[in-house]
Length: 110
Length: 177
Image (cartoon, rainbow over all chains, first blue to last red; front, side, top):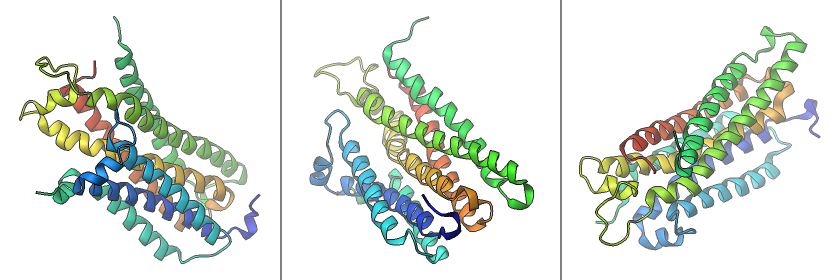
């Protein structure tokens, strides 16, 4: 049970940063699957769904693992909120950008 | 009036979950915005926090249900390959769209963006729900955390809205039957 009086901003920072990491991972998997046929095949965890199954599963796994790890490191700490949020939002927006077809198609091998 | 199982799943994915999501989002964002100590009594704050927690966890749950049903139930129907030599493609939405240069962009841009960007929404909604639950008692006095949560909340909504609107338009161009 978290004591309200001793609650630092570390838990919130860890959760939001992990959210950014998850979004970024999804975007990165999307770009990598376009750039490499081998990676696309490796990400095809279910034939009926294609590489989307692996891309989204990897993103969810990385998100949850990074959340647990950062949470353990920061749960009782007061972190530099502005800096952490700048990184979290940059990752989140990069993730959104990398799922945008005109962007990820730039990485399609000719 | 009859619905196929595919149409029922499509409606559940798009209209039911989508509608619930919109309701939860608007309620949640309003509650988060108005969560200021100077605007409330202690009792009012308690009630608002209880409603906010239910709303944001509901929103996250609906988003997970939406992307999971979309990806693992509906998407396989959408991308199913027609048997060799098939010329009637109306039951194979992806092939139907790609067969015509005038509709190919619905897949190449619309579905390609929708299927990926939609997954950002439940991730963002879940972290917002978690932070609200953990920080609830002191959230009203934490404007920096509230502001960050509001932005995550808005980005979750925008990504879900992009996916929802594209999904509706793609379904109109090539219904899943």
